[in-house]
Length: 334
Image (cartoon, rainbow, N blue to C red; front, side, top):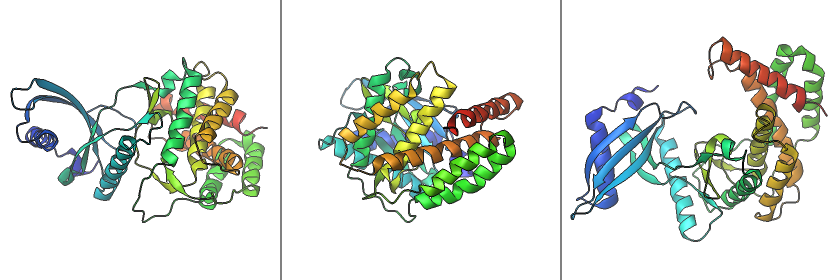
């Protein structure tokens, strides 16, 4: 972890929270008490902390309670980029471009520590909600993703988004490693790779804003809408890549926890139908989605089989190996 990301002491944290309150509510806003949960989440690559605070806004107003998330970044540009995206999405919603989704609000940015303060958004994890409200959740995800893809978000991009050819080039050595790890699945893996090479999709009619990691781990279900989190990987690209990523993750869920998603085929059809109903026409979308769906699944299998840092220890590694083998068994055969 970067030294700057761990350097906030009690006094600096209090100054940061107080300054954020004054920026939001004026000089009369006063921090009364606060606490921080340093171990808020173990998911993701960035350190995230949870701030719980009470403040009085001046003029005899009653105390108010706030919950904020603090997200530490390694690069100033990345933090400012995410903040800009969230502000643009919030402005689009205020302007009436509503799509049944919500995103965190930007509270403040503390540049010396590259700490982005965001509103804490409550909700039920989609991975849980989909088990008891499958149709509603699936439809809401499709509509939310369609709304993101047409959102008027301007990105100052210096790195071009990955093309299908780049994705395929990255996948080839992964498939070779999987063949070595799972020799019994070699034929299925070779066949899957050959099919993907024959069917490399053309570029989309127009690149759009894409989330980059629109999956259950980054989605909440709240009052019939989807709360979308973690825009760290957002860029411009093919909307089919977002859809393929989401469908691959839902397929994994249906294999790993079939009690939560009993009918993946129905969920897949429902999600795509809703997405297309709320999106501009794209006649070539279906084949592109299927291609990205399969490449994403193979990359996920590779990470399960070879990433030894996510869940270290013999038990965790054994579970990941078993899941990789199961996904190979059901995901690479016709």
